[in-house]
Length: 155
Image 1 (cartoon, rainbow, N blue to C red):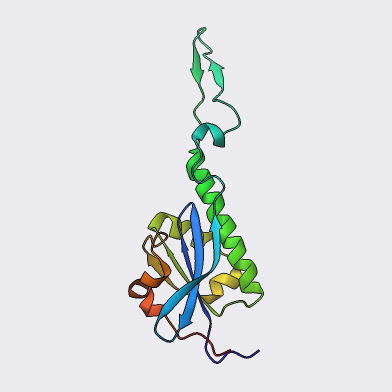
Image 2: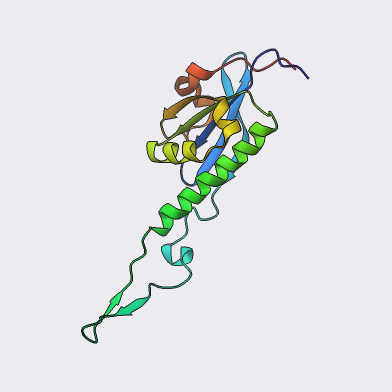
């Protein structure tokens, strides 16, 4: 099948949820074609770590101190989820499921997502938007994404 126009995928993500939207009609609408949710999205810290923090002995006395984790488990879970999104997008990019890619996410998530993208997806990246649109319904996306909207390819 030959496309008459490039197919644009817009990845809308944060650290817990993501979806891919594409143009669906000549009137400028988008529709979700892929949705991903983190399994750790609303878990407590105690659910994310295997055990409580360890204890160490003071070398000069019998005092013990708690060992603090080097990273926040929630931040680590969000980064792992963004890497999972990037791997999914990379897989679709290597199978030529889309021609152009746009990323829309809050600044901290956008940076991590962009860094995690592979070569195929990065080559198709045409734009980024520093905005959290995860909770924005598909029918309200056009004011935010009009710059990258193209009519859908002819069937």
